[in-house]
Image (cartoon, rainbow, N blue to C red; front, top):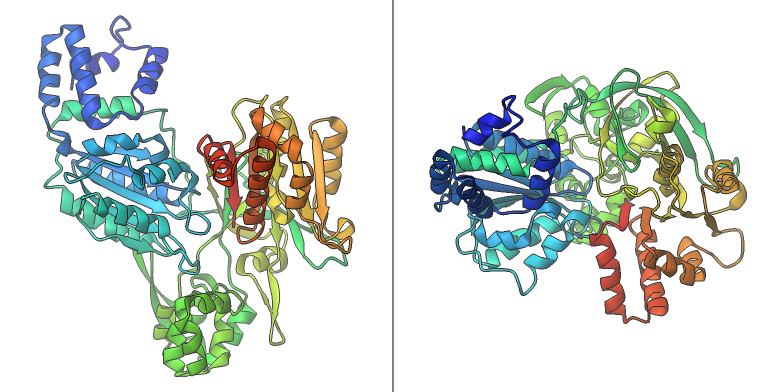
Length: 612
């Protein structure tokens, strides 16, 4: 332990840094590379004229940066952050000095000083990097990216194989680092939605591979990195998590669309009881669910299986043995079809029709989106052993819902706005797994397993005077209900502008009374609505944005934060294009300049999306 470190841990105020000084030091050194940290520590030691420290730091400033493992995470909803944190813990236990950072807090120019780098990256939307990774991604693919001949690296990519650009961000990071001359120490692993096992295997292999090479040769350097990279107290971890969800009670499941609406949207209220779970406006609630037993019976009947067959499956670090029916109800995904299941069943059933669909990725994705597992099996019945069938299915994963409440308002409750997924397939009504569970099968008073998924990429501005523009058609309104409750609770004085849209005013104006009350109170400055079916020509939120182009641009120019929540496939793209058009027209810019303008807003966290 360094002499200064002893003083920090002792009751000697004459030598210890006070809280303000420590905060200043942390802010000053945030983003320094390990080599820069070591150099700075040597400089400070020389200034202090304490010879034992100078001696120790002099050793630390020798080229021993190979003892540092930098781990970066690029996370949109928190999954990549969770994996990276566990990886960092495992590396530390192996004696490796770790520098763990959100890629947004990392200075890209520090890459040239790194020798060992691991990246855990998720993919956002249609193959885009997470918001936090935009600048790093742009730097890495730009002309200023350095040659990295001395860098050893590996990438873990998180994604969803039902999307076209599966693990795209991780793939691009991997390919670009290799192109810059870096050496891959372990092959990139592409993880699907059920990523726990693959991520842990990759992490364990990486640590085992590197621990002989990356030992904590310089305890002084490790202490310096630990001191200056801590930006806030860690705080106590919650007892409940994705791996250990809380059994909460459903308080309310109330339909908030009209009798004649084409949609069934529910306002859900859940009691968090004594769980101690806390959340912020912008966070999501993870919901575990059981599949519909009637759907499971239908599937078993088509497979000519009883459901009593004993099967085994891996869950976390355990291998479970249970009856097939129980596995299909509580452990396996049967309402969301992975495109690769179509190819699997085509081979089992020898169906040429399914084989043709599976051969084209776009066709497979579209077919999977509208056909549940039972529909595919029905289309080409075949005989299969229970265990073989189980092995072909993905593990059931929780669904994430944008939280529609502020804890400052509802305390130990959490509210959701859930649209029931329902469609017809050859005379059979198919419903979504979680939405059907919450809206139809779970009775008020029943238990639902939940956890909080924090989303630091969808946050209200810290300054309560900052104006905000919220664009949330349909169930995308959810987080903005939370925003308004939060702004009201905090007496925020910044202007608030809401754009809401749906099919009809009479049947689909979600939380209409609440929005009107916010208008009356003055908390909501402006409200623009678009109901597409109330007139011959369809009108959407992007049309309302264009109608208000001058004011929208003026708000942005005055520092407003802009938020979009809802459908990623069409709405978010159409709204983005409307914003581009507004910036072109009002800012007198080219299309490229308009895109750069919006990109700069995203980098400054003034343009945030929560799309799905």
